[in-house]
Image (cartoon, rainbow, N blue to C red; front, side):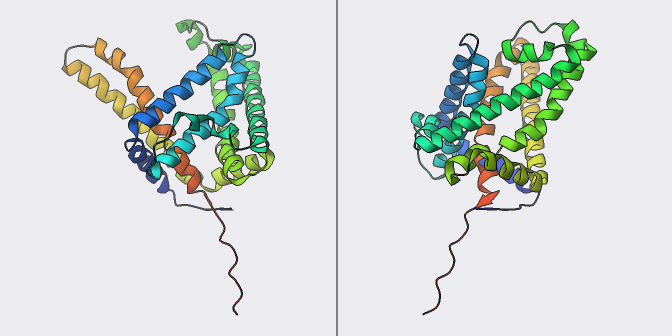
Length: 262
């Protein structure tokens, strides 16, 4: 395995590949995404430890969606069991993936903990346990500062974990080394990843505008509210179907050394 540096325009290629692969198996990939959301949501409902457990499961279940995309790209039909493939690859890899999940949960809680210094923990509590998001809270300078701090810290944090589950699962890299390799790969391919993220943001905004305009043309303003959530969820499923390609292009298998001439 070695790092592959790609041109910035590859970010658009990843988006197109994700969309194309999703529409090869739309029912399977959409269904797996909703199973992913349901699993994380149910885990988060467990009293006292639910929010932390959901964070621990996130790397492994994201890996499951990547594995499903890989199957679909190869012309196969991904089965529901692929969502937990991270825990079916053997005891050693399951232990490593669990360790990665614990590291993700602790790191994410650390990000929220730092943001709590700005607003006394209001943003962190809202994210972890929910609550009423009032206009007064949204307009609070302290709450906004906490939100921006969390977003700023989450960028390098996400780079640590972006490729890490795939490195652990497909290449047997230890959790600690996978974080290092993931961060290096993201920084070296930062241009491509930036265009990738911007393209998805533009796609989400563009489709949202189409929904709003369509509801206005039809004379049913409430239609936008009805369609916005399922449309956003469908786009999110397509987004998760593209993550595999950011990994497969960033790391390539090293060719074995050529046999000596006879």
